[in-house]
Length: 253
Image 1: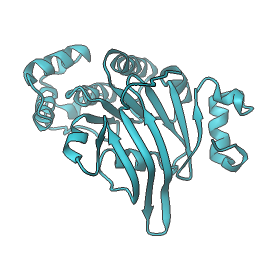
Image 2: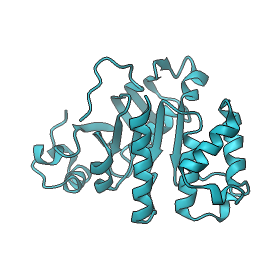
Image 3: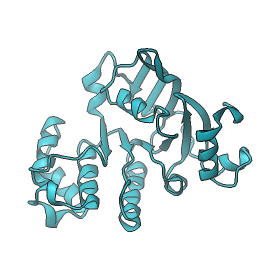
Image 4: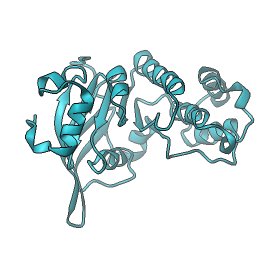
């Protein structure tokens, strides 16, 4: 597991809580993401993963708690905090009537990316999208659309990259390439990644650290390759199933 004792945290979440009526979706969640770190946010459906990500993105307002992105308080300096953040998910598709280049240009303008044309060319080359430059996104395959979404997510060279099921529905070969590009992002800059997925193989291959959510709380945290043994399970998938079915049988840390 990576350690970053002196570097400024890419993301700091303290006492985060979200209540809908009488339903507590996220309950006193605290964690950090360090530079060059990929953190997996795991848990069964309804555990609070997407709600947490939406609060970090500023889409939802927390009922309580604090979110700081690259040292900037999200509630007090929203534009500055979100300006060094970006997001990709298979369900958040880019406008299908715009070409790959048009989508990247529009979002680049929104983020105020300097030397935008050169940055677009760089990303089109990095994600192997040159032959799709003038193709409308709506006719691309799911794997091609995912590559465009990741190119869009890296336009502004974010400190914090949020990924919600980025490789869901992709074939194994395409998913392998996507994971490699995300690892390259985390290793080559000062950014960090918060990643949600249900693919436990992917988690063990990519993530430096994982947080297991259950019923809105962080139940376990640690190295994905060591946690199963620490809790008497033979695999991360078995541990995931235990958390989904019997969360109270596991020690909360």
